[in-house]
Image (cartoon, helix red, strand yellow):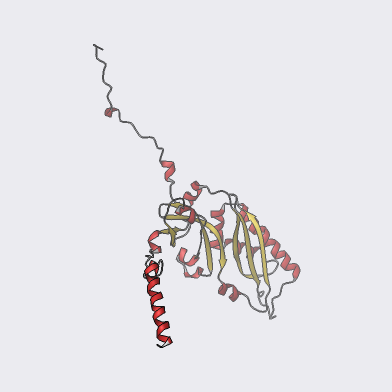
Length: 277
């Protein structure tokens, strides 16, 4: 007999014996038939709302996993930071160079109530301002508002030609740069301390601080393209829900829950006691 046929028959017998003894060989891979659940079916959509000082309050939507057991959905939403464009918020395309950041501070139903968290310039706008033959002046200062927010404000400015100037360059001397920077510090500190965060954000949007700096520095050296380039929120006080709802133009429902109900005297009539009792 051929040795190859003997070896083949012995292997076939071993294979049959193995199939009979080990039940897992007849089945497929373990866990192969396990159904994969749809991840999106466990999530909810929430609307992101900006403060009422902006024309359009609806910034967008965000996802979060639905509350299950000890994992609460609102805990995952609080503290989320959203970035949007000022052109979309105020419906003005001329403000498209300004990026605004907001942080979620409370969840009201399916709405996320956000507060100001910072702002910045778009890269293309910043690069477009920088040119040759002029001096770039930058300054930053930490300021505190009347309601306890600590902000780091960055300012940028560029020198410009005087009237009837023939010279090509408009470079400022280092002493003049220091004087301009000092004026920036004074004006930004004064404006920040005179009001709360809401008023300060409105000043940033209206560019009123930049115009004040430009006017104040005109006697030192004429400036152009003066902007509050960037704002960071360094520290903030504990969230006051009353002020937050006021900022969003909404009334806190928790304050209305304990209202006194007027009693109608006709509804209840006391029965006179019986003489026999």
